[in-house]
Every structure is written in C-alpha cells, then in structure tokens.
Length: 320
Image (cartoon, rainbow, N blue to C red; front, side, top):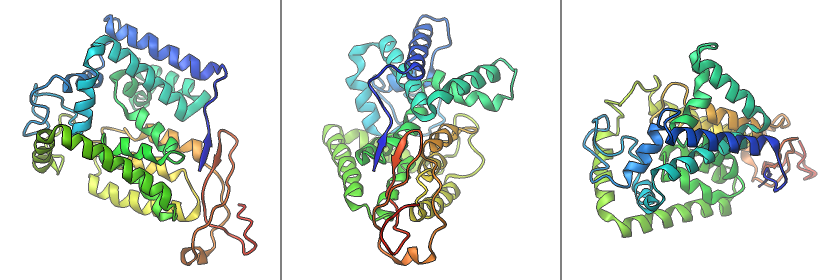
C-alpha cells in the first residue's frame, strides 16, 4: 500500500499549522497559555520513581496517563532536552499531525475548537483543539493509523502507547497481507523485548498496575460511557467488514473506538483521519469471502491512496 501524502514543497496549510504549533508551544512555556498537562505528564514519567501506582486515579503519584514502559524509558532519554523544549517540539508535532489528518480542513477544525472554547459553539467542538493544547498524542496516533497502512512497523508505536488502538494492525492479516502483518509484529516484539531487557522491573510494575486497573475503574476523570470491551467487539467487527470490502477508512475509525481510556468524544481525531482514506468501492461480491485476496487499486483525489483489496472481476482487472 502506498500513500502519497507528504511533499518537500512549500505547503501553506502544513507550514501554517506547524507555525501555529510552535507559537502555541512557546506561549505555553512562557505562561501565556495554560500548561499542557498531558505533555507534562509524559515528561514527568521520565523523572518519577513511581510511574505505576496501585490505582490509576491516585493523585500526585507519577504520571497519571500510565502508558507502557517504553514511554517511560523514552521520556528518560529525552530529559536532556528540558521540559520547555520538549513541550514546544511535542506541540509542533501534534499540530503537524492535525494537518496530516485533515489537510486544508485543519484550519476549520482549529476555528471550531477556538469558537467552542470561547462559548460561541457547543463545547464538544473543543476536542479538536483541546487535545493539541493538552499535549496529548491523540492526533499523532490518529495520523499513524494512516501512515501505518503504508509502513506497517508504525503499528508498534500504537502498541507501546495506547495499546488497544493498535487493533488496526489486523487489517493486514484479514486481507492476507502477511508480509505487512509480520513487519508490524516483528518491530513490536523487538521494541518490547529491548524494553524488557533494559528495565525488567518497570514491566513487573506495569503488569501489577494493569492487573489492578484492567477494568478501568476509578478513572481520574469521567470516561466514555461505552465500556472498552464492547467498543473492541464493535471495532473488530467493523474492521473485518472493512478489510474484506476494501474500505480503508474503517482503520482509523476502529483504532479510535479502541482507545482504552476514552474521554468525551476523544475518538474525534481518528474520525477526521478516516476522511483521508474514503473511497467508493464496488458493491462486494458475496463470493469474495470465500476467495483468496489479491491486490487491486483504489484511488482518491487527496491524497492518492493505493489500497490492497479483493479482486472483484473474473478478468482480474481489480478495478472498483
């Protein structure tokens, strides 16, 4: 699968969003905007002596986002940057990811977010900007669901961050793309294995933390009403349907539904990412479920997306 989406040429939308991210980051570290609490949580994970307390709702104990040990280890490696530079770089990356997901429509999302924050629009619209200003990686993970269809090793970043949002990896085996599936799995195993070798005690702590909080009870804030187990079942069914019918847009959607600790409509960035992969496939042949998968091409205007799908015609043309 190939996604033609990034160019070295000047792009006013991309470069403008990166500039907005830089200005927001500078404003945050100088006190002109509120501190990005999630970015600070990532940063503090690298200095915490107790990153995994007994209950994830416990106040004042380490990083309350509680990602797997590779995030803690990465934070430790980045400590020489200092919290100010780290915050600026992360904020720039998040706004860049917003552009990656929405392209020129990222300005509309930015406007909706600002209008919602000042009360001119319903508060739900604030989610588009709020995740960026909080320093949360939600937009980055949403962007990775697009990029991972071309570079399957990127699924490993979903696994070692929000874990269940890596459900999109199953797109590849469901479509018979075994080389892509192996690539994603192998890199994940390599990262986790290296992490265990470096800090086995962190993984022991993390295993104990997961065992005490697997039901996501006692959250630090009100969570999404639909439990994770139900969301995973829905996401799995949707992904299987999308994989067999050539609808790549279901990949970001299912990943968003599978985010373990979901607040409000926190899946919204993933829904935005899905719009980049929308295409109009042919009405599926019922026999497709019983035939081996082959490669075909689906094209969209922006960006061009080459999606592996089942061949629909006996002639083998594979066009939709």
